[in-house]
Image 1 (cartoon, rainbow, N blue to C red):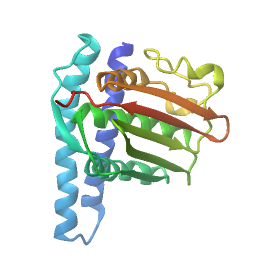
Image 2: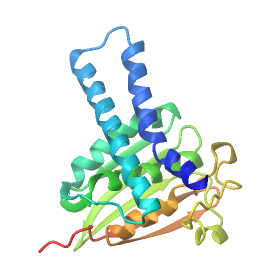
Image 3: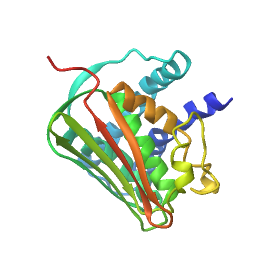
Length: 223
């Protein structure tokens, strides 16, 4: 039951984006052709991502290894795309989201990489108050691609940090009981980071916020 719940959790963010942009199309009295095409494109892409991701997540969790599709992605473009998709979710919670990366190519499995950032931002939102800021930053340092996801939320107790990437561990007592806990999905994040030849660590101060640091080489060695 826990695994089923975890898989369902991974699909909440794209579903929220689909519903949010559908609402915009339905509610807005006047909408330009350009905006209509943009919203429809996001809805289509997120629906497609849900279909692809659901299969990969099931395989990753039940089999332990998904059939990965490595391709070189421009991180600046991918981060901009992720930021656009998550904007409707952030706006719904009155949270400012800044998502930007340096230009540069990295070998990734596109859908798993997006799932990684979606999950980390989702957890940051659960920890944040209205009016808060979440930053998702990417930069290249020599052969590594470095990611930071920074929130201004309620933080994680020191004794909990080593536990939060364990399978299905939930720190709901601290990071938003009403939202169902923030640890859910982090075990999957750790698996995705490992698959991309990376490491993930957390720094947090209670009442001040949390920063997730990721260093990865990319999932496929470049010849």
